[in-house]
Length: 514
Ligand SMILES: Cc1cc2nc3c(=O)[nH]c(=O)nc-3n(C[C@H](O)[C@H](O)[C@H](O)COP(=O)(O)OP(=O)(O)OC[C@H]3O[C@@H](n4cnc5c(N)ncnc54)[C@H](O)[C@@H]3O)c2cc1C
Ligand code: SF4
View 1 (tube, rainbow, N blue to C red):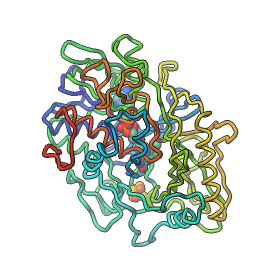
View 2: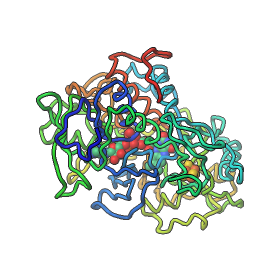
View 3: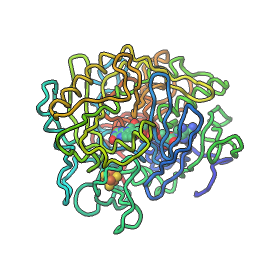
View 4: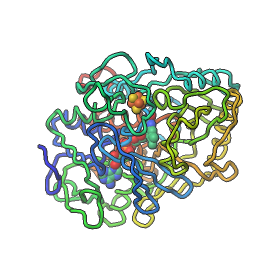
């Protein structure tokens, strides 16, 4: 079924986007015997290491090789572009959202943590995650140990600090992924944002992080039923004679790109929070899809992300670049908000990407520790079209109490570490300077069409056969890294598409993870 272009072809299902949602759905539908085309706007990086470039795409979106930065009104977004989506640059943290998150009335009544647990289990078997193990040379990273000791001493902390599960192989030897691809041992280089480095002893890259091309997408391809088409940018979707027609432009999607249509009986949107909203907004505005909910674009959340606060001038060299980029975290929840804080390595790379620093040399900043704060923000942002592109509109007012509480926790961490608190990008008085790595919502699931874009199984209200299976489904902040929840929700969308019912624990129809 290999082919360079999907244009002119017809499939049972077109999946748009190859990130955490798209990869899971494509894999399960292909295993169930459907012919599947995955249309991905970015390139494929066969070695698993992405590319950082400085090419700009207009002023609203800045593309840096395998990720892009969207400049929003009140909040900027970093997201992945390429086969594997956000897994190309993720730090591998795989945490389940807490049960209380699903008790928020904005979630459909039928989607609870108990219902999602079998789907989390299924996805956990495909993308293995476990706490970091000591490097044979360096031991446990100094930054991790310093974070844990400081968090333990914090008065505001409400849960035991822990080594978080990460989808990085830090144990001895090589292990095969479920698709049989060898995953080699992490070399603690701290460059997870750009991908594992080339290896002298292993052909290709180190391959320590569980990229989606090593598990879900590899299994999907192996069925022979799924084809992944890189550099296929989707414009809009319309109803056709036997399902849907998907408008595609090839290559970089510029003005003179080759354009055409792909046909499918069913379409699954998994282009990520901004990508999925953009396709649906364009389709609605062009009159191509007429039944969409007025809630399209609403309930956007930045997951309460608080980037990139730091403790600087620590007495100890914390070796911020050593080890995987995130290894530890601690619960700082309050009666009002769920809050989780993790350490964040490799900051100069991230700062270079978001434009606050030119050089990427981490050796200049050994006496510091940076953080990723997450919490239950108000999830009241809006995604709207602005000069032909989707744009985030975020008013921080209702989320300011959360940001103040995260700041107080981080100041206490800085005290415990004997350093100074610094958050260069953020203005505490106005809430200006927010960035999220975890955009959620915009096409949320709901019981009623007035309050969300899809039903609780991910099928778009008023558009049978059209599904959403990515972060845009999520109606509230998760206050933890979201990829595991996105995978679980996508597994659930796929299971309902195939079997028309809920999967239970030890279900005889549980798909194999190989
Ligand atoms: C630096 C960084 C580190 C992170 N680390 C973690 C972590 O450790 N743990 C965690 O849980 N989360 C992490 N995240 C967040 C995680 O990457 C995202 O939440 C996740 O990737 C979202 O999954 P998704 O399926 O919704 O979309 P994505 O994974 O973003 O996939 C969407 C795909 O759709 C494609 N697409 C978009 N528009 C179109 C179009 N019009 N046509 C065709 N294709 C299109 C995109 O190119 C992309 O490949 C991190 C994020 C960042 C920025
Ligand atoms: S720290 Fe480990 S997982 Fe991260 S890029 Fe380096 S080798 Fe890969």
